[in-house]
Length: 565
Image 1 (cartoon, helix red, strand yellow):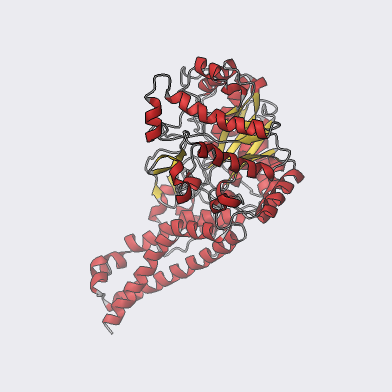
Image 2 (cartoon, rainbow, N blue to C red):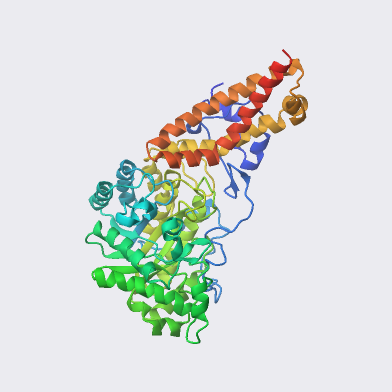
């Protein structure tokens, strides 16, 4: 019976069972190719790593969440947290989007795509409803002079940056560059040449705001990026998550003075960078992430003058986001004198530091919450929404979901924002754009892998995430011949009953050959989109540990056979 035969589903009931029952599939059953099988996975689990342990996510870290939960949401507001697939699909909030601008965030500090792939996905972004890009270059920008050491090995060239901007303009995507200038400065401060500009000597994340050289550094970075982005209207200067601010020696001395405090310390640097932008590039408005502003009193923010210098971008990526708290926060910023502001949701990269598959339902709920905020808040202030797609939590963390894997989530979220909700009709539109016959949002169950750019990566990563570790663990931990006659005790002593070789070796060789073929196909698909270092990292994190266990079994088996020859 072939895997494409529908009878195969009936013959193998584990294929239609929830993820938790897949542990019981028999080793003798070959794993199915993705386009021919229905996968079902509870998104509360990370398929490639088994059940997820609870860990703080980028959206949950206590230092990242605004302390704006002043009152619970109105009981009249729809509650999304317990809604299932059908309920979410039937949500219809308005006839059109309240957001004038819908930007897709490209986080280039991990697995930056080749320009050829951007040429393929920019038309899709536009078709789905995006009209802008927030490009976080980090070490992918071709810095020059003393800053040249900031470049990654495969940093874009000047001509490639120009090509990206040309492609964006061609598809009506307005570009806003993002350069970190205070926190998240690891890609700069990790270098010995700039280590003396750290706020805390041991930690490369935050810039020392007391040294004139610090402002000169970020000013040069901004100016070089501006040089290649003529005619832009906004420039994002970051300034989020400035961890350990005030803990450096110079800051401690400065804070001992009676008129100084942490708020002043933070705002002084933020305003200095913003003024640099406004003085040297007067037609460009600086944007900042708002988390360092949220806890500051309304009176202090007003008196500081920061409202005349920047536009804050309020961000929150959790699915049960406090709508009422965000409305109050927007109103607070309005009272402080900020004429305009932005908001930011997420379409990937916010549910687990090492997440390999995107939890579409989580991100849809998050974006639906932002729709409700926009409908309830001071809409005249609202510039637009950025759908963030984080590729790493910070410069040193592992990769989370690759961009092609997050495209279905991006499509769902953009279309929900465009039409003011997620209905059956919107679902059909998304499926048409992606070339997927049936895309579900709280589980992945599809009879096709899609036809969108990068769909082969999406399909193969899904296949690996669901089946690689599962099939190898089945052989190593639940195959009675391996656990009974070739245990770690036997392997260490190179001993095995000769009869048992025929029950172990053929299955192990077959499994290794099949997975080698899949991995070879995946590597070829990745090479069309990503640079070698990103591919190497992803394979080492997600594939090699499991494959090495299987390869080691065969090596130990060969050693045992040789010992008895």
